[in-house]
Amino acid sequence: MYNEMLKPIIAGIFMGWANVIPGVSGGTIAVITGVFERLIDVVNGIINIKIDKKDILFILLIGIGILFGILTGSKLLSWSFENYPFYTYSFFYGLIMLSLWNFRKNVSQFRLMEFIIGVLIVILPYVLESYNQTISLKNEVNYFLVLFSGIVAGSSMILPGLSGSLVLMLLGYYEMAINTVSKLTRFSNNGFETSDLLFLLFLGIGVLMGIVIISKILKVWFEKGKKSILNFILGLITGSLYPITPAFHGSGKILVMFFWIALGGIVVYLLGKFEN
Figure 1 (tube, rainbow, N blue to C red):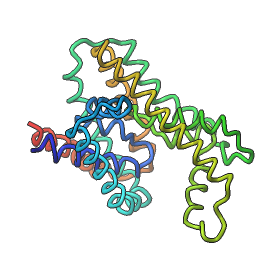
Figure 2 (spheres, rainbow, N blue to C red):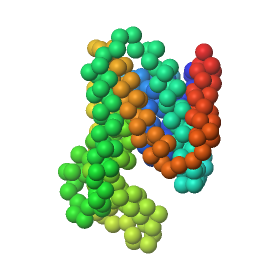
Figure 3 (cartoon, rainbow, N blue to C red):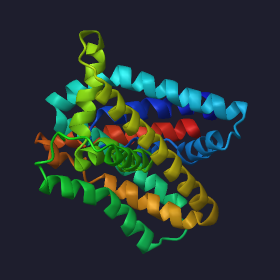
Figure 4 (spheres, helix red, strand yellow):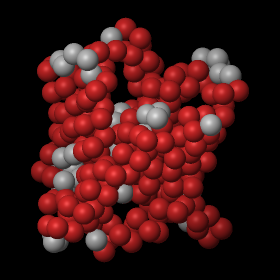
């Protein structure tokens, strides 16, 4: 009952919440909640048109959970992020830190190369972003670059530790994407133009292509070298602690910070108890 019904919904809710908080990866949450490999399998099943009723139910429940997470978390987590970022990130730091401790049990043989590559893939975009604060809205749209940016962003949405919105920001299309989507609400006022439709179309196709490409790669990697990819994922999760380090997001009382870190750890512990 839990694995078939509740687990995908809970995973989806947490993934929806992760999409609200900058720097928290939906892919990392998928690993934490134990649905990552199954999600990759189902996505590949959809691509190959080889999907059964259980897979349909799984992806449907994940989708419902994500939607519920975004709707319920958008106000609460956005408010907490704006008003108490230090403690909000402390909670997610504890969530991921204990999950990292639990995930290490899946790695039977440690491989330094894959681990370091995983860490660097997550950390480098944030380092680049911190050194390049001048990226802003692009005035001229190159639809080939929009498509490419969508592919890279789509790939990053699947990989644990990476944020698709950050990747778009680094490529210079984040602000345009946000502004274009916001125009949808002003469609009746002629605010939405043909160029906006083309931008979203190329970006959306790119995102879907990125998801398909990275899912295929991860599927083959899981089948051909599971020890290797588990070390890679371990590196991704380890690297994901960097952007959500509480000290990077304000300041607060140390004891309260440890309380929220512990609370995040308790959530992971309880999820593990339910699964067992």
